[in-house]
Image (cartoon, rainbow, N blue to C red; front, side, top):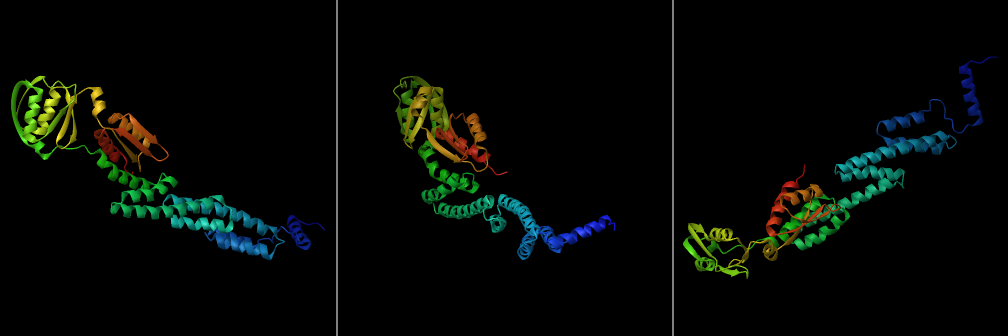
Length: 334
C-alpha cells in the first residue's frame, strides 16, 4: 500500500503518540495558542501562568517548559523597557511595578534589582529635599545643608538638590561679599571750588562735611597740588572724581572710614579683598559656564568639578557678584 505525504504525516503523529514522544505537543495545541494570545494582549502574567500549569500537569511535553522560558525572557525585556521609560519621565511609583514583576519571574535579574534600588533612593531623596525646603523657610541654613549633603553625595545630578544647595550658598555667603557702604551722609550734595591746593586739604574739607575719615597709604603724595570745581554733587561722586583725576583708588573699610591708595596693580592686589563662592549648577553645563565667567568677568581663579556640576570662583566681591548674575541667567531649565 502506498501512502501520500499527508498519510505519512498522520502515521508519524500516531507513532509519536504511541511511543510517548516527550517534546512534541498535539498538533494545533490550544494551550500554546491561548498563552500566546494572552501575551499578545498585554496579559503576560496570565500567559506565563497558563504555560507554567501546562508544564506542571504534563511534564513529559517539554515544549511547554521551553515556551515558558522563551516567553518569560521576552516579557522581562519588555517590562524592563517599560520601567526604564517610566523612570526617565520621573514616574517612580509606576516604574516600580514592572521591576517587581521582573523579579517575580526572574529573581536574580540585576537590572530590575538596580532599578528598584534607585527608586528607593529617589523616594528617600525626595523626602530629604522636602525637609530641606522646610528648614530653608525657617532660615535654618546650616541644618538644611547637613540634611542635603548625603543627597548630593549619592546623586550629584539631582537638580532639585543642586537648586537648594545654590539657594543655601546664596543665603549664607552673600553677607561675606557685601561691600561696605558709606554713611548716608555721603549722599549729601556738596559744592566745592578749590584750585591749586594740596590733595590732603580737599579730603579734609570733605571729611568735615560728611563725617568720613580718610587714611592715606604711605605711597600717596598728600602734598600733591590739585583743584576741583563742582556744584551740588553727592559726596561719594566727588570722592570718585578726585580719585580718578589723581590716579588713586579707595577701599571702604566701614561706613565712616576710607583708605586711599595709588591705583597700581601692586596696590590693588594689596588692598582688594578676595572672596570664594561655590555655585552648584542645576541645568547649565559647568565647563561652558566656567568659560563664560572667565571670558566676561576675567576671573582666573576658577575650579570646576564636572561630577558635582560645581563651579568655585575666587575673586573680588564685585567680580563674584557679576559672576553670580551671569550664572543665574545661564543656569535656567530648557
